[in-house]
Structures are given as C-alpha cells and as structure tokens.
Image (tube, rainbow, N blue to C red; front, side, top):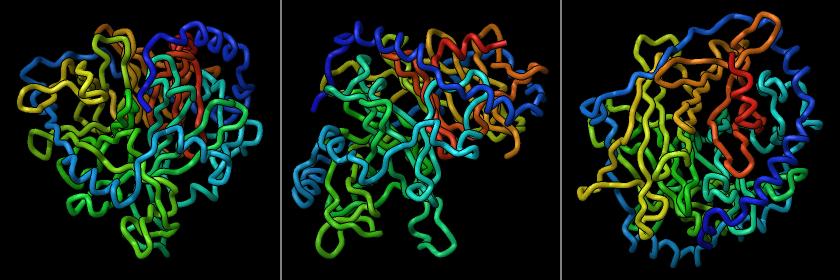
Length: 435
C-alpha cells in the first residue's frame, strides 16, 4: 500500500491537536517527587557551530541496494509480501496491548520526564520485553505528514535483544520493532516484526544485530541505525515488503518446515543500506529524526559521544530524494553517495535523541548516572536553553534513559521511549519549559 498524499487531513489534524491539548495526563506531581532532589545544573552546551563544507566529507554515505533478484527469490520462497495494513490486522492483543499511564507502576513512571510533563504515556508488558532493550520510535506522522498510513495511525517502537545468562549468545543484539495500532488512544495493540538482512543470494536471511538507537519511517521506507560491527551506518526496509514468519521458534531464518523470526510473526528484510564512505572512524549516525520544515524534507542525525568526553558532538542532515522512483531514499549524486547538506558541532555529549524543526535543534542528553535524570536542550547558532523544573530551577527534567525524539506534525506531539514507557508531549510545551 503506497502512502497517501500530503495535506489531505489538515482539518482533522487541527481537531485532533485541540482534543489532545485538553486531555493532558496528571503525571507532573508524581514525576516531580521522583526528582525533587536533583537540582544540579547541567553544563550549558552553548551555541551550535556550523561546519564548513570541507569538514563534512566524513559524513558522506554510499548507497547500496539489495539486488532485486535476491528479494524476489526470498519472497518466492516465503510467500507474497504484505503491507502494514495486514500487520495491523494482527494487532489484536495476542502479542500484547500497552497499558495506559493509570495502569503503570511507580517504577514505570520513573522513566517519564518531569517538565514538561507527558500528556500521554503507555507501559510495555515486562514479560513481553524481558531481555530486550528499548530503542528508537517513529510514527506514521513521519511516514506521511497527514499523520496516517492509509487510514491508520501507527507507531513503530524498536527493541534489541540484550540476552541473558542462560540464553544463546547468538540471540544477543537481535533487533525487532513493535508495529503499534494507534487508531484508538485508549487501546494500543501491537505485533512484533523482526528486522533482517537477506543473505546467500536471497535464499535466507540473518537477523539485524544492532541496538536501534535511531529510526525514521519516511514514505514507504524505514531507515534504522546499524551497529558498529561493519561499515554499514543505516539499513533501509520497505514497509510494503513485510514477510510472514511461518514457524514459531527461537531460530532466525530458514528452518525445517519454513521460516522463523525468533518468535515474531513477521520479518522485514532489508532492501538497501548506507555505508560509511570514509574510514571506520567516520561518525556513525546514532540518533535520527525527520525534519519536514526543510525543503526538501531531511533526515537529521547525531553521533554518540560519551558524556564527559573532550570531543564535541556533530549534528547533521541529509536531504531526501524528490525522485518518485526513489521514494523514502536519500538524495544521492551520480556515484550513489549522499552528502550532508548541513552540519554543526555542539559541546553537548551523551546525546540520545535529536530533533530539528524550524532552525532549532533539540537534543536529549542521557543522565550522568542511573539515579539522575537527563536534560533536554534547544540549540541554535545563537545559544542554548534547557527545560527547567523544581524549586531550584534544575535542568535535570528529562527522562534519564529516553531514546529518540520523533515529531508528529499532525498532532504537534513529540514521541519518545524510556525503559518500559512510551510517551508523548506537545513540542509547544517543550518550548514553554525552556529557561
């Protein structure tokens, strides 16, 4: 199913934003109690420093497409690919249903930001996510600016296998996404799909082994960050090319009697990748988001620099292609390379989430320790401001372990995820909370 055209539901989007503005959750008080003692002011990262064109060469990515014959061979063996609509038909609660904030435990709610407060929050079933680490979030608000994929509102939540003492070491690092039916905000059901990479000429597939720290669903493509095991920086998946897993087993790939996806009902085989064009020390995209305020739309990225490092963090963007035959792919030159169209340097380290909108850059920084909260800054070339909370005007207001910042233009919300909590809050409330 192809994505719907833009701007078809602007009126409905405005109505939805108005409704959400009046239904904020009463979470502020509880979150404030959790962090009342955390008043340490984080170091101000200052203004963004634009990088000159000669400094952006290490950011170049080389596009590599999976041969069509590989994909055809795989679908011939596994069965005709399906789209998101078919997957949503399976989100009937058999895999799981997220709990609303009122049903979350106090431990779950510790993952929520203090200020600004989440207006919507949902908790994952601990049994279903045990031995899995949460990663990035993207939505149908990224896929199409009318906020829908076809007639549906959808959230994609990434998880990677952390493994356990009694588990096969080969399972560690596997990546999967929860395809969440968000049509009914009071009941979010989901189904799992394993992220995979075709191998052996399309006769088999392996699991993607990577913590998915960044993920963007744009048009019919899903772009996710890759681990540090090879030169690949991003993998690309086609949301119209979802395969059924036919065997419910812990294995991955072709097995006796069919195809297995480590217990997931569906498999997404990669259709392309973007590799580092420079050496292995070139910056890898760590966090990703979509920026619709640029022309053309752009993929925003930041690298991971550990907190306290003397090295500064780079933030940059790639333009998406305007070619209809390259839907969801980056704009490339005749050699198939994608160059950064803008890049900056920030003194902020420990960046877990990045968002760019209307020339402002929002960076979510990880907590310094497990007992602290993170910080959320808005930066531009003039300076930086952080959200504030508490009687001592602390900057430690953001979710300590939050991954990803994803802006849903239709509703004006920013979505993120921390530990076992998926949450949203208006971008306008972030701007109001800036000191």
